[in-house]
Image 1 (tube, one colour):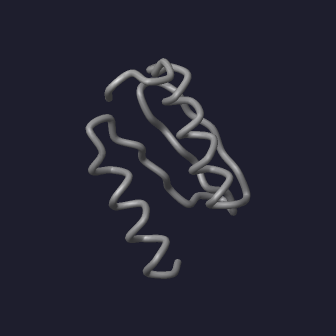
Image 2 (image 1 turned 90 degrees about the vertical axis):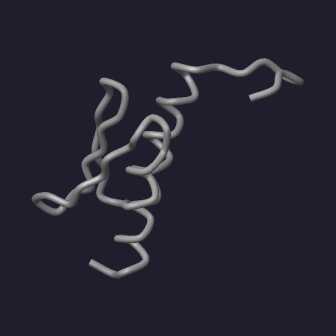
Length: 65
């Protein structure tokens, strides 16, 4: 696994609500806030996990984070 991938996975684990992505059996598996999924592609796994988080914590337009 490339060091850029490792750095991205480490950064995601450091978020206030951590996202854990692991490589197992030829797929990237993600877990966060009780959700999980997998993908053959790292970018897709990150997108899936972020979309999951956004659905859990929706922010209205103009609302401060």
